[in-house]
Length: 250
Image 1 (cartoon, rainbow, N blue to C red):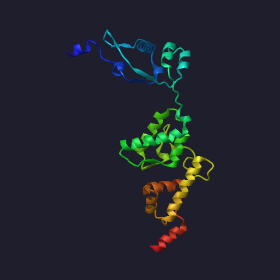
Image 2: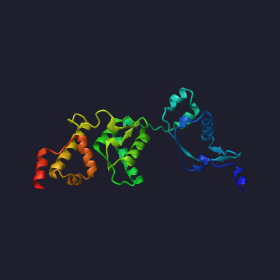
Image 3: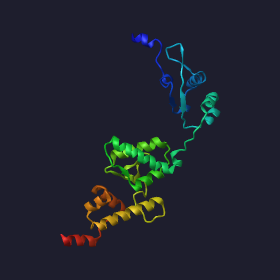
Image 4: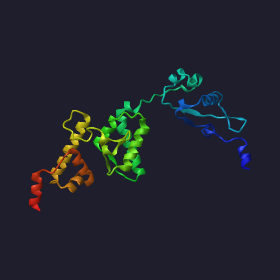
């Protein structure tokens, strides 16, 4: 009975997508033989199952993606010109992530929310220095690379506030890059301004809470361990007068 069922061949992707849309990623990687087969389907609107003999009509909207300009692939002889013109009906150019600076943080936030559900850690968010580190990277792997970096950070970060040191990009934790973890000395750059703002917020919260770390952490809505990490990163220590006042009132 199973043999009879396979006698006519098994349906392929085009048959499965009949009446709908089929997405072909990295179409430039198709072999010459596969390119010829795809061209026949687009021209005839028919497929022949592997192991079958009779052609079957298919009505499929095709969306193809490539990371290489197909026109250049045609000139290099790696892609059939007739297939290229069949596919090149409504071209849509998507700029690489390195050219979409604002999208980096928007996508990172979306991936972080997605990761928070996957690893059961609600409330994950990016620290300003982490956002700055993401902006600095050129993202040769585009959105996939960004997503992988965020998913890893969500799973390994020691606190809900994802720091730059939690980001591993190109196999390197961002705190290991020269100068990345030094406190800012001014607002000459966007990152410097963000770090200086963060430092001032820490000092304000600590002063308002009499340098009580627990209360300051609650005020800033971070954990005590995160606050200690931030204090260390910015080189903030309890001033001697505050220490004396605390010991005098105990």
